[in-house]
Image 1 (spheres, rainbow, N blue to C red):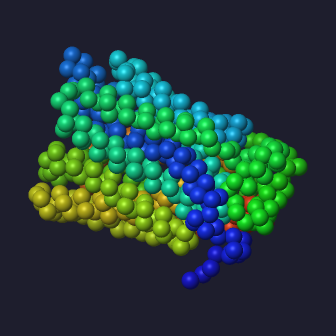
Image 2: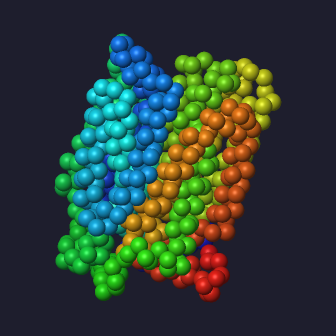
Image 3: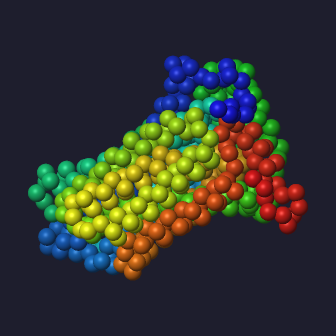
Length: 481
């Protein structure tokens, strides 16, 4: 097995029981409450919508197919704006203050949705909630990456993805339980209000958390950065080396948007946006949003189809846990290429299953098994790597800005899949999955030719490595990777 580049000595690996590393784990647990809220808010709408379509006299909002689609997509468009804006805000005001603000947005959005008296208010509140979801998707991985020891960064940052899929699973399970146990058509309000709980916990927890030392060093607050590093690093030599690397750029000009024109940074941003396309156009949200519709088309009953949706949540959590174990042992590129290969194979098999097999239990359960197999490859090897690389790829002085830009593009791709899938499915039927397979072939080629390896380096050493690798030898030449 190829060893990662020796950016840090072996002695820098912190023992799991030292107080500094335990504190980093606490920081990670608090920050990922934002990811838990992210997951819950994106998943709960599936359980709430059937009740919200009821007439207002029956406790619903009287949704039509049009308003149902607008309410569902309002969060996604809010997330695109929130991810972009929070990247800029976190660079200017800090990661900690941004997470405190996002907790308030989550809280307001969750309760606003739960108590919405009409469709217009619900759309506005879903958009507000999306601002929080998008903000968390940008700030949480960056904050954890800047706190984590280099050789534990993968393990800690990927907890964010684990909490996202855990939140989705909890949304599916709690919605099903509430629908079964509470004989009230207005139960959808309780489903939506539960999202306020992680928001409160995030806000309270972040009151006691320190600011990112890298952000402090970038803003010439070296004494504060050193004080934080003493709380999160046990090895004095390692700590001093990291502080020296952070503060080495203090005298550089502050980052501005004009730096996007710098060839290597522009290339990195294009890679980041491309990874967002890869992550979304695998077709994952065709399954996360529309699995009941797909399964009903195979002849499965509505109740069985809803149970299958819970299975999606469970397999996503298990797969993400496996991905977290794998990612500290396997190069990022290898995981992406393996995941895309699995996605291509399962999409082809699913298309054949739906086209060739007659309607009946075998067709339904084989389709469900293939969907879950796809989600295993997606959540273990593609989504996990995507969120980790968003925290690693970009230079410190403008990390929040460009992560926000890249993640905003990912949310736009998410919205495109959510909007287009029902239309394409209605037009092409099972052949839709062959289209996804073809797109995934193109994504595999993109990863193979363009995406750099980021494993095994501190953030500062990785930045220097990427600048060297992605700076074209000639202005007109494509960037070699």
